[in-house]
Length: 455
Image (cartoon, rainbow, N blue to C red):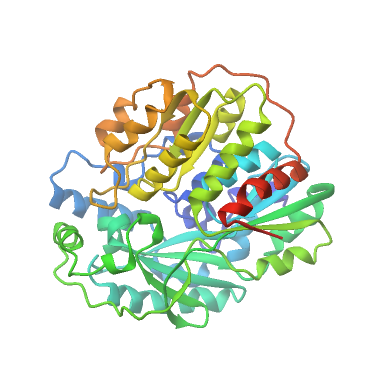
């Protein structure tokens, strides 16, 4: 069997493309950066479906759909982390690559990988398993149910950790029918190591990019942590409280009758997208040039990569696209010479950071805005007017796409919508791949003063 055949080879009782969560940012970045997206980009995320139904019925149907798509909990002990790693590298079908990026899920890392001609390999992947009888408000029940599932997954996979996330804001009705884990490798999986040793050109290096944000995490077991909420939502840990009127209304809308008190003294640890720091040690022993880029704010990396790509393309720089979440297309951006700035989510703080970057940048001819609906409305979420204001930074003002605007903020659209929105741009000859030394030098110049760490 070749490494490419593993993409569709059933392992551990389920096809791997059913194991890795289809709606996750990780899945989007892997498929898009590797150029193997295919029909997958036409998939409407679960939270974007059944918008014609009244809220109570819609929540019921979404929970049922999520349960049907998740990994059956009975198969938890068949999940094979090595098979997942083989499936990931199987997306890359060129004989050799000039570099490899091992990264926390961040849209700008996919843009950087495409510019470098590099492979993008995630350091953490999301898994969603069924939770019969669950409720969005029963986070203690989610912890207990997840503890047994994590024990079974970890028993088969000694070189991974699991971070469980229970987030009614971002998951809505889905987190009452399923539990979400972020599987994080403690050491390079064999498929990654084999790829890095045999599929990179001589002298090629690796770049590890890690998100250093922290969040309160309960240590359930040695390799299982549990967190309520996430920094991705733009909320604070204390906002996940029944004392927060807005959060209470969201729970009531989900039919959650209660919300157990959360210990405010839960200690912070690296959040779910960070990956494990020990991977950097493994990369260093491969005998290849190995670099690390650490960032504590995702918007810092977004700004630095956008500036890098604007400087790199002498024929570019007049148009900009503000992407968000899964709405991105690095290949179309590269072919069009557009400058991409990626917002992690529709959180107000993410959009405000994009506004600050635009205000401090040389003016663009036009700014295209791609807002991804978060699936809920609330104080942490940017308004549609805020997204529209970003377009005003261009000399000509482009309207926000009507279809995306009509579904904002409750109904996410398919990833392929970004490609359709950018397809009208004039395509140019693809430039030669950017060199790793050039990228590292420019990122260090721009990022060091903004708190990014390099080694």
